Length: 246
Image 1: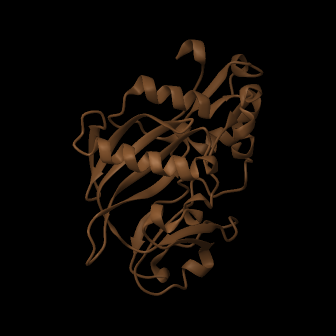
Image 2: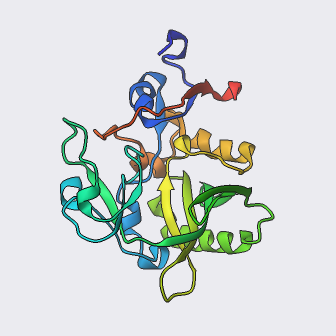
């Protein structure tokens, strides 16, 4: 950490969690993130599928196809597995981390939403049938439907999320059922790709999600990252800066 960044009162952060765990303290930056159990505690009306957390050792004993991912920190690749035995074991010394398990579904299209105090500041389509396909939310044929679903989510569950956060939603298809809107996941805004969203409006969310610790709103104190021991990968692309420099 360069000395010129230490002890600043105006620093913000954007990048990966591995470096954040070392840099946030010296920078005086408070990192806001959704609770690890947020998705599996959402009502079925918003998830549209069974989602639960379990120790990795238990997940590796499951039978049948399953989708497995880390709850929030991207510490290993999310993937569909034919059964639990095909899930790689954790790195030595990492213990038995919790993972998120859900049934396998098909997403027709997926959208990333940058939320600030319950408002969709900007957004982007980022995938169609699992393939990267970025397009702005503004003017998209599904914009009204996406915003309507996001409004319902924030009205009913907004207090369970940080004031600055990214939520991914999409149209989910299951055999024998019509496509329905559902939440894909919630992410830390300070570690989220913008895709085709408006970068200036996304920046408003990023700055609030990882800014000076003394400026955190009271309602967001419970969402400050506690620096829990997690498995982390070295895929960090990091920017440390102050508001005046952004």
